[in-house]
Length: 228
Ligand SMILES: [Ca+2]
Ligand SMILES: [Ca+2]
Image (cartoon, rainbow, N blue to C red):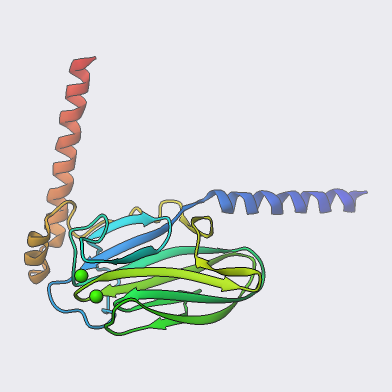
């Protein structure tokens, strides 16, 4: 009897833990975008402490090639994007992952490269195979745009799973992972370019940005207080 109760307790803890783990994730991958002021002909080496220029969450990586500004940014050319989060795998099996991109892209699963689609080109597809277990696995999709059109699409297929864009129901990120400080909160691209050249200053700028935010918040608070 004691054994049965203990078993039930262990199972309950297991289920609760699994639920908690699921609840700690939000939909979409975190998209960190880095702008460059020169040609970008390959994946750039990004220093660990380098702050992205723009951070957002994308439900899917499903961008047809475009000449316009990349959604949510001022960038048309010379930028790099890193999408990170987890891929929710429906069942155990061998999966084929694909990127179709303009220009280069690649995919890492649990730190291991699965798709290699380098170089400068119009929309071009490359794929790689990987054995996956049902559940969440760490994923990183990288993409860079030099000039001309820019697009990136991430798809998958497996036995019983027809090739398709990886759906929003399979892409998540750890709650709060999107709260990444950007290189210049709200600064315009031109300013960003100047700043990038004088790399010593970003900290000072950030402090300024913070105090601006604070004073704005105060003004708002006052206005609200008055209206009440
Ligand atoms: Ca472009
Ligand atoms: Ca291009």
